[in-house]
Image (cartoon, rainbow, N blue to C red; front, side, top):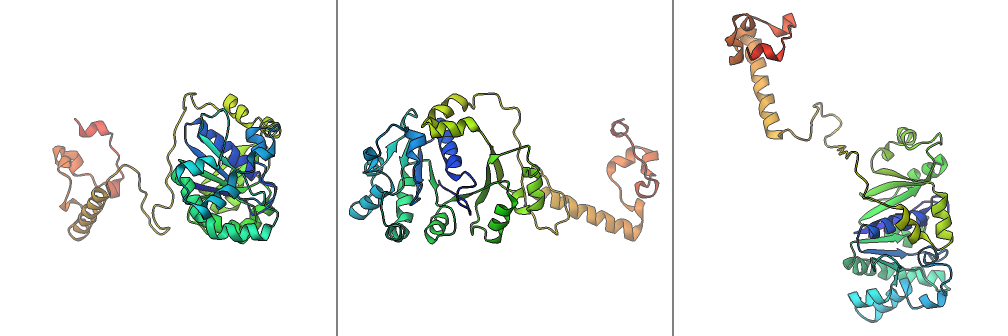
Length: 318
């Protein structure tokens, strides 16, 4: 599955931190993960994941530049795709990192990326369970093109309503968008619940990642993997699991539905109730009743509509 992380503004929503955190969580959960970065600048994802002491020259022949070169010269087989990646340490080879470009000419890089990236992304995804990409923020053509070929788009926002207003003035054109609030502060006036009231689109598919200074420090120290291995643990008991469905029917549908009843059975019951109402309207309330009512002479004479009489369940069981 191809998952693209993007924001409408630069440097304010923690896109890179969010994608690193979720990619590491998936790898710890034994998923095979690819982690790509399309940035021309600030493409330094190797430092938090591999370490600050590693010589950048060791990565010269890897990443997005290597994928583009090999795509143009030969088929992107599994072996080639593995060779073009940096293996993130301490995760049993479950996280492949493809760093951003080292080119000097931005226009040439983005022009070439536009023509080849969809095929490259598909090839990488073929050999991974999840393929996360850190997409350059903003509305550049290459960024929008990458978003269009992703299976899921994660729009990274913050609790600044000006940022949210700017996004919804020009939202992502995708049917599978999720909203993620990184560096989330639950003490803010603009909690997710309050933001969902102000922006109805956030009521679906919204989540938060709380601000964590220790995780930020770990990234700066090249210790992001070690931090996640130490602190991330799904082995704890699950207290509850919730399931919610939304927009299952149109707004003008009047009936309250549930997850477990049969649609056919419900429609059959509605038709039967309508027929009974029509018979009673034409021939009187007592013209048709349930057979159970005739087990008791008193009950059979009760007009529930007019008398509003309520009987306990045990009354019917004798």
